[in-house]
Image (cartoon, rainbow, N blue to C red; front, side, top):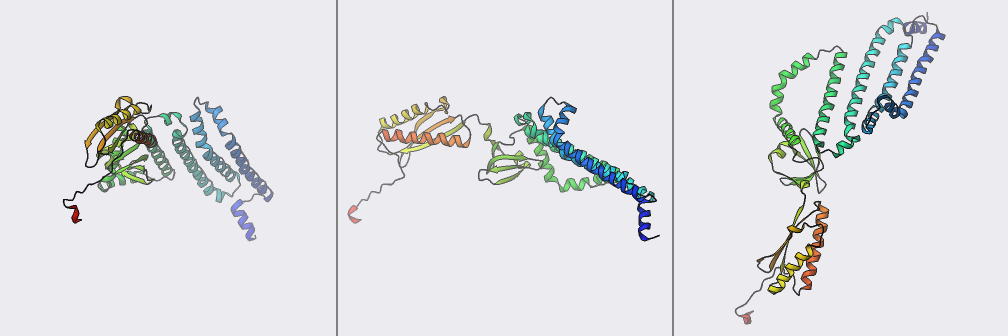
Length: 363
């Protein structure tokens, strides 16, 4: 018996070569067939989901379709390979160990694919849900979505360990013994976590809000267990620990229903009383012509005798609370003030000092 004959007998037994080639062709056909099915499913998965589940809401249908498209394709390909291996006539000495091993790998692959699909579905719910986009509890929903993803992965790991007949009670016991050490080493983490929970349920701000805390100011981009990420107006991304946010005063500027503006300007001391009074009255009347300004908040008054000017204060509240709308309106008001001052034969003051010499001849 030649070496080839020995290897042939070891791997394939006493099966005839023509039969072996036929079964090999069938195994390859099984793989190719499942590959074709996976391509068809990829193109028609949304239609099949619609027919099978008959969801009343489009967002669930879209979320499920997007979540299972890649995992289902992978599942079909793995199934094709698995069936091809099982069908192929290996010798009893090979198959007795190979088939159980392949079957175990196949089961683990299914667990991983199902976990991946559920993980994707949970993550896609806020993406496709109109209700989420309109919800006032986005932060809490995202928090529980993250928790759900972690639980799904944890359960999958436990099931895979059990599939390998690994006793997980030792891991649980180890976690219990190491719990005190971890707790002592992670006091700041625990503080940030519970502070994050307080922020999530108290809801002083949400993702997308404009806030300021301490010397930091910007837009909230992300909230997680440890910190909150704020995008400043200089486009820097700052990570602020939750414990700091819960202990410091946080100003949420997004919650403003109107925005205050205060403008102070000075007129020259040569301005007459009647002129000063007329300037204040005309500015007040012109402010009432702006629809963006809340009418009963308009105040214009002569404030004080400054060192080199007669100070006038203009104060109002605007309906537009965004930075851009606030600045545009303020610019309009400033131009209007300039026009009023120019029309009343007076001028803006600037910081000046008059020096009087007792003996000018000595200069």
